Length: 127
Image (cartoon, rainbow, N blue to C red; front, top):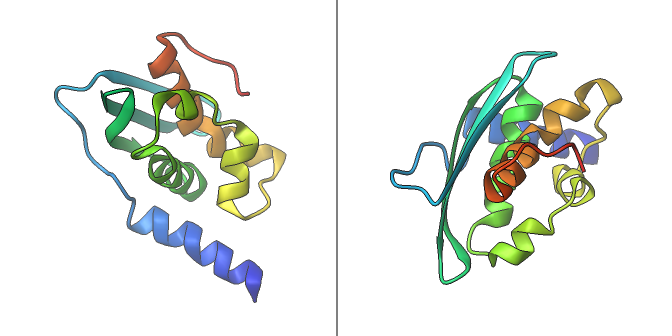
């Protein structure tokens, strides 16, 4: 029962992604793909006084990729940029609340990779 509730959360974020869209202008923007399955994600951040004032993402792909990015945007919204920089893959996986198979790990972490690459201005390996 609990497992099905978590899966329902993933499906809800996939069907109704939070913070969907783009920001123009954005202080940080980055896009990347997962070539293994074709997932695509772009994240735009706006930062005011060292804090994420707005975040949007565009993307297409599997339920895990879109849901994880949607959840990630909720995690960073309103947080200080230093805290956002400190988010790890374990933090995101904990928020997902479902087991992620090795085959789906890159899907689940694509949004985090894009977020970090945008903030740091370079592509990052999965953390």
